[in-house]
Length: 229
Image (cartoon, rainbow, N blue to C red):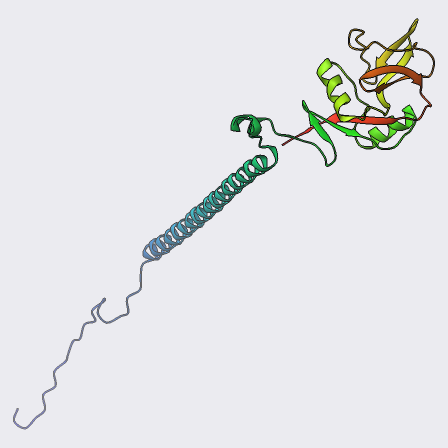
């Protein structure tokens, strides 16, 4: 056919996957969500572990610093204590180990002798008042147990003055002399002038001892344990 228009039928077929948008299968969505959740869980656990490790390291650092600080303080105190012992307790006639090991001190105006401190009064009081004064000083009237101690007290007291000792008469089937610590008098140590009786106390003068009425007024000596540095 000349000059005519020829029509042709075009049969266009749709392609199922190229023309329509891709829609994921429900099973694929589930897999993606599961992976994401696992990732988040693992990330959270890792962060928690890191925090724990950081805290542990911090605690160890603090403990180490405190240990170092304590060790340094202990060394400083030990050094100062040694210096103090050297200053207060050094004796040219003693070995270094002696005064470091056994450094004993007494309060001011007290005299040191064999681990004990002695104080000599300048007043006069009764035996009971003298003992009360010693107790106020955390001490007692002297308890003498050997000749050396007896000689020492004689040397620190005045020859013309009488001093109370910690020795009184107590009745136990008969009157006997007892020290204030409860121990009996060693008869070989003292030859007491005068009897033991009611209200009897012992005073010493220039190394000699005698029985006197406890209400008499005499000077006195106090004795207490020395402080160990």
